[in-house]
Length: 458
Image (tube, rainbow, N blue to C red; front, side, top):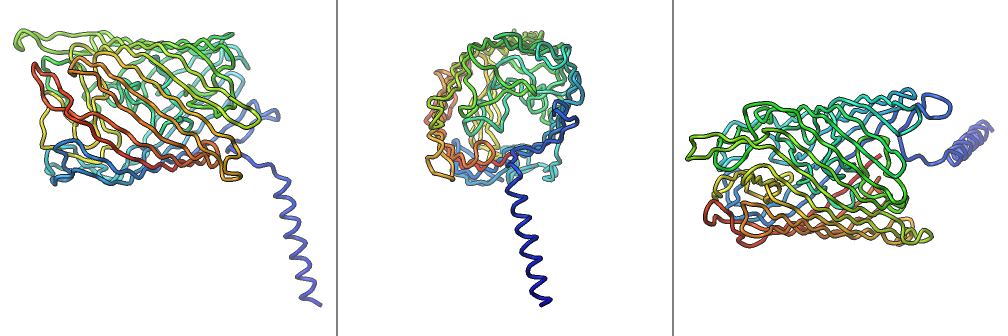
């Protein structure tokens, strides 16, 4: 009898617990309301993007002193934590911690050989953002004045991207124009004003850039080709203006959403700029004179992200932008995302970091960038989500290159649960180079890579 009573109580408690769980609505965020209406709140988010990648290496690539015509690596592209909230009607705070580009080479110097003193591979989370913001009009988005370490940027929407919601495997990093040169992983010490009034969305900033000598790498020797100046310090001015024909972009944080997956109807025209006096330097007259140049960057673009068939859940996302990138005469910088190699036997005149998967990402000239994706029906795989295939193209016409550089990506997202859980597969095709004449670089074939990413975000 006693065992029967205990069994009855166990069934009763279990049934009650199951009924209680069924009554709790599924939540998609970690949010604590500070008042009854929820207008004052504090929220936490967590993001992890794990990459598995096979890469056909650039000519001459070495890994720890050994030739590496191909590489296969596993890494953490981004691991992040956000803490933010509307503390009062006027007060907003935003903090972000995280790390980026963590693979087997983490902490090892990028050299032509395996010599050198490695740093510690135990990279701690560092402060990405720390922003306080004052709302001039409580409960309105007309004018917000903020300051601190922030990604708020003037050049384009992809210069301040919400990386958890991007459609492509990665952002077009060339749009983060000074990344890790005079900023901290695209974040800058900035005083800004932003807001939304009618159909307009605006943001303007005054930035105090970091010296190039504090980015953790040796300062490039001054030469006839422009580089960031190691002497002098000038403020940076930037602005970004958007005209929305339909719905507005989310305006809670300074970050801009990649794709809304059909939840909003967004069509806009946007443009922005970054300008800094004497940001660059170079030599002329056989090295006898030092010349300083301003950095002037601007862009114009169209962005569309909207449902096609609301009943089926289909949607499109598209972007087309033109970027004018003036870093001074003949500026060129190679970059490889989470580069799987650290050395090369090849030499390209006046350019470093050419190994692995690097390509001429930044330069003086112009860039046309486009991307397009289609979100399939929401019930494509029943309870197992849907697909979003996409393609992107970056066409860079830089002064130091003999012809336009085309970087092409094609991929597909398996949306298990929107951006909260998705698996992405992407193929990239990029050019490789050899020395030409007059210090120019000539295209010498192409290489490719294939990457699988698993993103989890809450």
